[in-house]
Image (cartoon, rainbow, N blue to C red):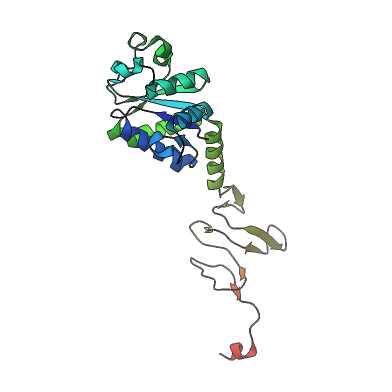
Length: 251
């Protein structure tokens, strides 16, 4: 079942409804939203589909253009813009008007049928076609605050992008920063911490590793495969590529 139901009138909101529907589904998955032009199942009557999905959703977006409240259809039984809003009211679904265009005023209670008058008192969002690149993200962000599944999806997305735990510390007077995803890292110190050689091993690197600019102090590289080294080296660089055959040694 959808989390957001998009309520709109033909001739007053098709473009906005399609754009918001696409944006919601791209961001939060196919079950994020319901729009009648796309979502009614094959063989189902639209009456049962509309009522069922309004009851199941968490938010009803009411798309309202400049003449929305002046339409006489809102006063007539059987008008589906009206019926969807009434169904949401009966089932305590959160109703959020979306004003289409900066010049669209909030509906006035006096202009609405008494049973729909509470729509005029609700906090609105705004959508304008030529500002969609700003308005759509703002609408998605607002919905994330009231739809728990959207908030969870955003949290998972944020965690998935946090591939780096950045830490900085002083290593013998030199700042060291960990960056990127390098898999398991182990360090072997030969001798005391104040002197002697240090060997760092990267196991199963899964991302780029950058040790910063300047001279690199990495005495030993080990592992199969080629090693590329840039900048100045202080000490001996040992490249080990596994066991070589006698024939390979001759070459």
